[in-house]
Image 1 (cartoon, rainbow, N blue to C red):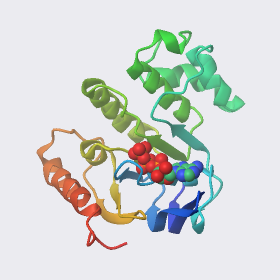
Image 2 (image 1 turned 135 degrees about the vertical axis):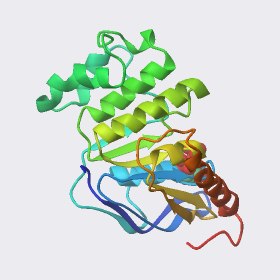
Image 3 (image 1 turned 180 degrees about the horizontal axis):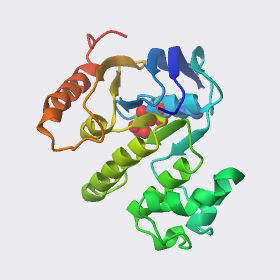
Image 4 (image 1 turned 120 degrees about the horizontal axis):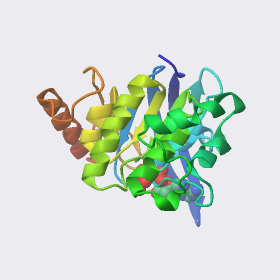
Length: 246
Ligand SMILES: Nc1ncnc2c1ncn2[C@@H]1O[C@H](COP(=O)(O)OP(=O)(O)OP(=O)(O)O)[C@@H](O)[C@H]1O
């Protein structure tokens, strides 16, 4: 497996706000082994993107720490593709790509189903294609930490299902330690080894579920049904006053 282990150790995040301090995360501890895929679920505003930004080193925790074996090479896919509209797909990828991987750009675009589109500009693509290009841009640098922030969130369900299946295949072919933020329990069960459900105020890890079915997984496999129910139950309990240990 490639990738680095990521460990959140008793992480807390607070923001200054008028009249005081707003505590968003408290005592968040979680471990993702090298090549592991962790899905983060929780209500809007619970701090999922904040955790990704901590892992990326874009911000620092107020308390605790995020431990990685070495400074990671981070591939980050945001909710929207964030491609530069005046550049072709090839140029968008070339911008982030170290010299040794420049030759991989056409193959990486082909890997996400964009063969022959390398000279298109983002405006010539559908939303789903643009999102696949964003995945290619994250993968072309051979990340050891892949951060996926609701990669399918802006897509219609059919296109989202296609991208999920592609992500499942890609993560097998190009393993990387992955943090996947999603609001979709089915996506978590399809793609992740470990589901972390966030809840409470301030947010903590309200529940975890390990999934050891072989990957890639068929979302319609009946073996995933009890897991899906378990994730939904964790979500229901996450914000109850008695919802699970921190
Ligand atoms: N720079 C900042 N300054 C102040 N508050 C912030 C900042 N960044 C995030 N927050 C607050 O932290 C909380 C968590 O935000 P975050 O974007 O991590 O949530 P999320 O779970 O990813 O939400 P969503 O599912 O809607 O994307 C929110 O209440 C947000 O307003």
